[in-house]
Length: 178
Image 1 (cartoon, rainbow, N blue to C red):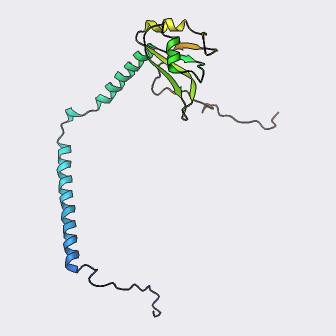
Image 2: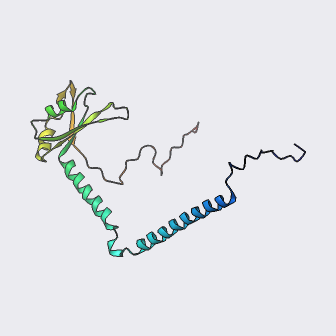
Image 3: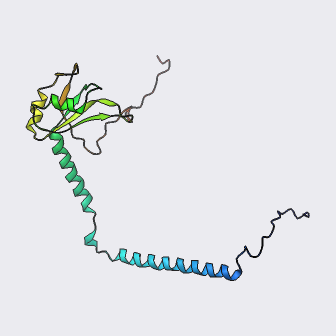
């Protein structure tokens, strides 16, 4: 190992190494595959440009979003919020409590990320009139706890309630000022 400073790599048998002709053949087949992919890509790009502008789908998301917003508002008009629900309470028990108000589609008791109940529920009725009947059950007891019953509010997209300090009026602590 002389003073060349380089590393020594032993040369393997010539049988294990592919010949130069085999390498050229492999490379040319890979080049052909790449050229075939490029040709397909050009064809797909041509198809993309041939779509007429009348077929664009730019307006559909807006109408779909407004339709879903209207549907959500309609469902919310038939729903109530029930607060102060006992953590051991089951949806079937909440349904029994409100069964005389009208026919119930769904009872949802929300849970946290660990699967523990958050202490409130939503009840969705078949008809809007049932909401008024359910509001009469405000302050009634279920599992020994007075329930807070009110109409479910509809969330408006983009209207977020900020938590914390208002950006216009930041908190500046006063240290010993007189």
